[in-house]
Length: 207
Image 1 (cartoon, rainbow, N blue to C red):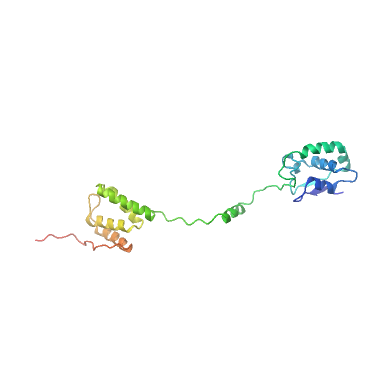
Image 2: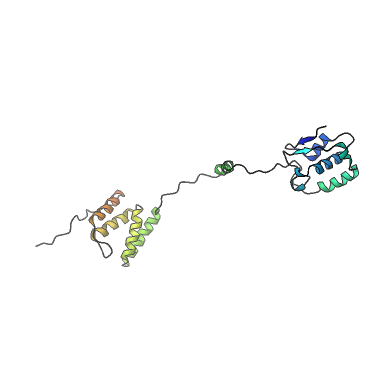
């Protein structure tokens, strides 16, 4: 008779006992003897949760017969009564490698679109432009300049033209700067904004 048995998937303790019990031994005696001889082969000591892959030590015939058939049946009845998810052998749950663990998540979730570059979205740029117009109407030149600049840097054509106008004439916040005005006018033209030709020099007074 074999002295050891490796638990395979689908095995139960009763099935293994039927394969390994010696002559003159009841099935209940053999099941109880296997359980007592291999306490580490069961999750939480539950006789219903045999761990796949464990090697069971097969007790000798004398060890099995040390418990009477009636006593074995009574003890086994109490052990089997413990609740269990399934009577089949329970595999040990081991965490997969890090690379394997991430793979299912990548397959089950749709790819995310790439993040847009930093800056204002078109709708946000338009909102900043409107805020700039309101600030300008309220006499808040500094706030208007900040709003127009933020929107213009996001590619908002009307804001770029507005900055061109501001630098073309100058105000209490910024000095007249033809070079900067031309730069913003050019950016606005690239957005399809019609731009009048800016002044290239200071106007002269008639004699």
